[in-house]
Image (cartoon, rainbow, N blue to C red):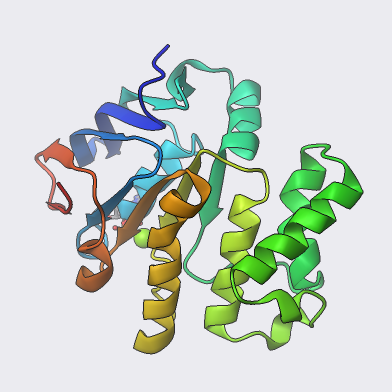
Length: 225
Ligand SMILES: Nc1ncnc2c1ncn2[C@@H]1O[C@H](COP(=O)(O)OP(=O)(O)O)[C@@H](O)[C@H]1O
Ligand SMILES: [Mg+2]
């Protein structure tokens, strides 16, 4: 059990059909700090995020989330830890179009059996804090890419996770909206006390991480330090 940091990765390795995608990736991302990992398309960034979330199994290595070793847990306990402790942000927002933005944001809390009314209140507060409060009851399909990503960030924060993982969060946005979403994301560790890990092929976004990452035999470039 390690409590010193919010996300710790030790010697992570991933291979597909004996092809090494990444090897010996290690980092320590304490609360209130961020790590940005970059590399061209196909170098394993999404795979890394899915491994950190406990969705894909690593070939080797260990991951601790809030001091709990994710890699030693049963699939059921791992899912519960992910639901409570990890917020995920994807490239396209990935909102459910039939639910309103507020319903999208509140859903993870309701799935975790949190009280309904308090969850909706927190959802509203988060949308407001992220600058899209007036869109709470809008038709989700009418939102712009940048608005969608803000809603996705609110959804990632609803369970008060210690860790936010973002996969190409600005990848589908124009440069102005991308800048806004990137500012907002890299402000989360300070505002909400979480740890943030962003994977991106965008050098401007990647230059913003504060923690360091080490790795061997991988085409990635490390950013941060
Ligand atoms: N399930 C899979 N089966 C075979 N190859 C895969 C699978 N998942 C990922 N890969 C390969 O792993 C590499 C890394 O993919 P990915 O993590 O999506 O990269 P990135 O996010 O950096 O673009 C790619 O070469 C991809 O083709
Ligand atoms: Mg990817």
